[in-house]
Amino acid sequence: MEKQNGQMRAPYPGTNLPPGHPPEYPSAAFQGPPGYPGPKAGYPGPQAGYSIPPAGYSGAGQVGFPVQHQPVYSQPGGPAGVPWMPAPPPPIDCPPGLEYLSQIDQILIHQQVELLEVLTGFETNNKYEIKNSFGQRIYFAAEDTDFCTRNCCGASRPFTMRILDNMGQEVITLERPLKCDSCCFPCCLQEIAIHAPPGVPIGYVIQNWHLCLPRFTIQNERREDVLKITGPCVLCSCCADVDFEIKSLDEENVVGKISKQWTGLVREAFTDADNFGIQFPLDLDVKMKAVMLGACFLIDFMFFERNGNNE
Image (cartoon, one colour):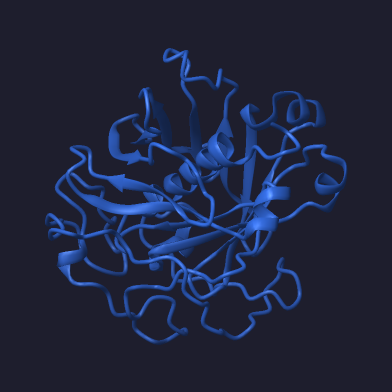
């Protein structure tokens, strides 16, 4: 799912710097609101203890900026010529594989166009490249569902999404159960569970019933509410990005966003291959960053997976 018109840029200086260069971190003015899940002990960056963002704070930056050129890293498990992000030192208590998320405040998600799906109309397993703001690949995500489930249930299908690191190891697993996808059934709302490593839950994203707005709650591994997600009333992506704001529990402060990016008329009309960007505070707990990644995939399937072939 390669973005045609540009990428997000890192709004904070010092993010994704070359190895050996000490990163510069944003000031305390850019930290999350009270009750926000802060970094674990030993994380590189600001320590726990958050102040309310200033008025007008809109998260981690803007969408639509060109990727800076980085050297190509040849690492085991990665395709030749594909730039992978060098693995940073793992923070204390960080699930294995999530250390890549400890030094970034933006994620780019590009869904690959499946030629078989375009030509035949049969739904295939979705595949995604997950990159940082410099265009370096962090993970590769692949859906794991059977043919009948994909083509009978369409975008409402249950799925398992396996997210692999540059060594080909599965570091994150997303599980979406089968539930009725209709606003007329508020007792049967969508959800997704995030595991890291596989089999160890680190958080959940739960849909909240609302008459007009897409609304979700982000929960930690103990099923405690942590953040809210609110989308626009009209989910039209025609010639513009669609932003889902990530807010504090009281919905007074915007701390990030998930953006479905416009990929061009031809691609939007004939495929369901989408581009997304996620922005969050640099010093957010890596587990919550991984949960936001799960929220992005749930939003994609719920609102943007349908096209002319499967509507």
